[in-house]
Image 1: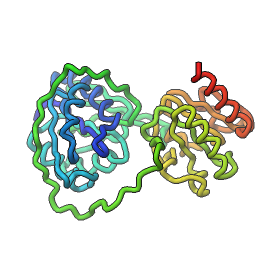
Image 2: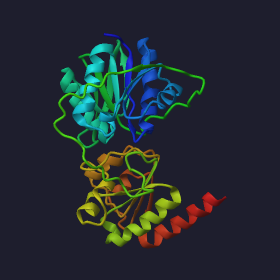
Image 3: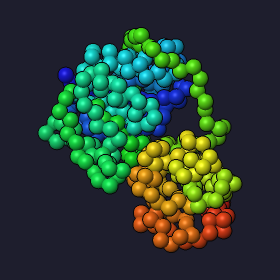
Length: 326
């Protein structure tokens, strides 16, 4: 068993996700502490142009499984191929982004390898040659420090928590083909319903404008989308707004939705129930707009505006447009 750090480089339709670069930056730090190297594994179809990019972000070796069978994410196909690779290269640490794909893939991989998993971590450190992971528990009301005892040590890390390193175009990596071991895949993806054109996924956004029950109806999201366009932001929502049918579940942030860590989170008409806070309280800056001065969201927000959002949001949009035009 080596001490090398293996990063799962997530890609969709031949485009690397930002979380892959974040994992490489973290992997390089852990590898330095462990006296090892950071490597990457890339699964997909027609992805032969991507290893150069991974090298620029720090990967010293890139394992590539390029096959039409891996064109669309398959839980069993990806897990089987990864497990077979890990059995050969024996990394000490495996880093996977805590995205929708990563949350599905990591536990399957851990089960196949018979090892533990530290999910949805926000920080990682090395102590006595082993990983110590910090992760939120109890809907974000407490932080747990977890030490993994088995090998390899598998961790999923929350996106946007860590910065991506600056790419170095002079760096190169050894590229090694990987045999596809998809095996007997019992479930296949037959169709992917993509989000609307131009929409930003809240799980990957650096700025999110979110609406809740206080919008009063689906038409309230017109104000949210207007401000989101100005800020090049994603549109988020509370569970109450989704349950009411005002917006699709893909936009839901919270314990039963997506966990996000943007640079800026603007919560409009959202009361601040603990279930919603569990999904966004790690945002670097939180701005709350609510007409109820006693709304719990103000206890978490960095900045608060007490007022009618139908009045506040158009003014906020105007000011943001003026600032961006300078």
